[in-house]
Amino acid sequence: MTNTLRLIVAHDSSSGAKNQNVVELSNHADPAGLSLQGIEQIRLSFPKFTDGRAFSQAYLLRRRLGFKGDLCATGDVLVDQLLQMKRCGFSSAVLRADQSMDHAQRQLGHFASYFQGDATHPQPLFTSEGASA
Image (cartoon, rainbow, N blue to C red; front, side, top):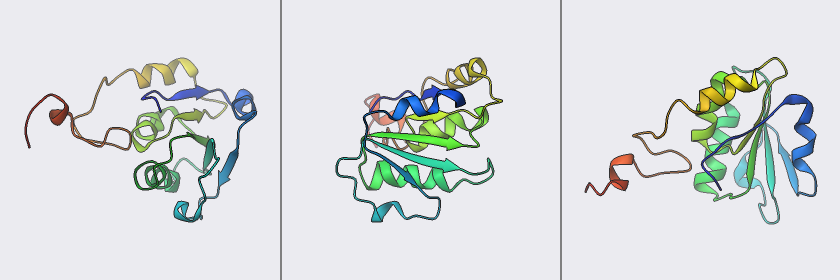
């Protein structure tokens, strides 16, 4: 898994799932009950931008369940959510149709690293620089 977030425009969203074993996980579903064997992509939905359950599901899938495939954010995905999506473990996001791809790419370029650990890099930044805890 890379540390980048692949952005997909809304009208191209079906192109990313060809020839893959894809699961669409409901916001109500517990990821722990999902068999991950053979799954290449899990699509997590944001029915409204104010509904953050998919953030929790993504974090659980990456950190606790060890899912290495593509976690794709779908639904009401706004540019403002992209940094948090990346830190929670999403590897791709289908932008809502009215969102700007240029703005989204600029948003993702604002921070080169973070002091705190996250879903993809659990150790805090100071530990990777040789400092002791």
